[in-house]
Image (cartoon, rainbow, N blue to C red; front, side):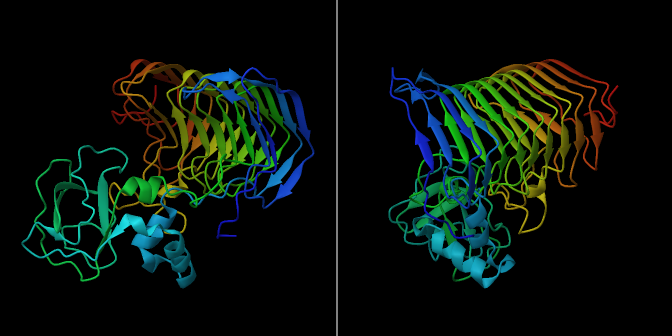
Length: 432
C-alpha cells in the first residue's frame, strides 16, 4: 500500500570481527509485501572506516527466489516534497497522506514578502543560518502554499544572505544580491528549510529500520545471485562493500526506488543475462562509489526513472546491453515525473552518466561498447561524463530515440568516441 508498513527483516545473518560466516545458500524462498529485506547477510565492517571490511561473509548463494514487493518501504526522493509544494496536482487522499508524513519541523511561516522590499518577514526562531555553500540543498530553502512574488519561483531553491530574528534576505546564489520582490506574496505563504532534508533525505518514513532492498548483502565475498524474480517497495536489492560477485539470469520487475544496485566499494563483479524493469522507480542501475573491476554484459534495462548512474568506477565494462527509456522521472507529469528543488522545474537526467563522489575524484579505464540506447523524449543526453575521467572508450553503440547526444567529456583525458550509429556529438556531427 501507499502508507508505510513496519520495517521487518526476514532472515538476518551477521558476522563478528574475526568470526566466520560461510557457505550459505538461500534457495526457493518466496515473499510478498514484506516491508524489509527478506535476505540480509552482513560481514563485519571495519570500525571507523566507511569502506573497509574486517571479516567477510564468504560463499553466499541466492538462487531461484521470488521476492515480490519486498524490501524497506521507501517513497523516492522528493515524493512528499512535491505533493506539499504542488498540492493541486494530487487528489485529496494523496494530499492528506503527504501532510501526514511530511515532518513539520522543516516548515516555517506564514511569511510575508512585499512589493519593493527585499525582506522575508516571519518569526525566525531559532534563526536560520546564512548560507555558506550550495551543496545538495543543505543550506537552501523554497517557498510554497500561496501566491508568490512574480520574480520568485515556487519550489526553487534560494539562499539566505542575511538572518535577523524577524526576517531574512534571500538571493539566487550563495552570497548573491538580495532579491527585491516585484509583487506581494499571499498571506499564507510558507517556506521549507533545509531542502536536503525536505527532499533528498526524505525518501523513507521516520523510524525505518536498517538495510535496503529485498536482498541486502554487505561485506560478502564469492557471491552468486541467480535465477531470482524481484520487485520492491523501495530499492530492489543492494550488494555493498562486497567482492567477487556474479549476478546472473535475474528478473527485476519493478521498484519504487532504485532497481539494480552495486553499491560502495565493490570489487570484481559480473552482471549478465538480467532483465531489469525499473517501472518508473529511480535509477534503473547504480554502480555507486568507487567500484572496481565490474563487467556488465548482455542485460536489458528499461523503464527506469533517473537513468543509469556510474559513480567514480575503475576498470568498468558496459557492453552489449539494451537500454530503453530510463529517464521517466524527467517526464512533465506529476504522477510519473519528479521536480527538482534546484529549479522548481522537472528533473533532467541522461540515459547513462558517470560522476565522481570525491573532491577532484578520478575514474578511468571505462569501456561502453556495443550497447543499444533508445532514449525517452525527456532525457537530457544519451551519455555524460563528469570531469576526472581517463581512458574512456565509447564505441560501436547504436543510438535511437529523440535524444542521442554524447555530451562533451570536459575535464577528461584519453577519450575515444567512434563508430556509434546514430550518435550526436558536441559539435553537432554524427559519430565517425
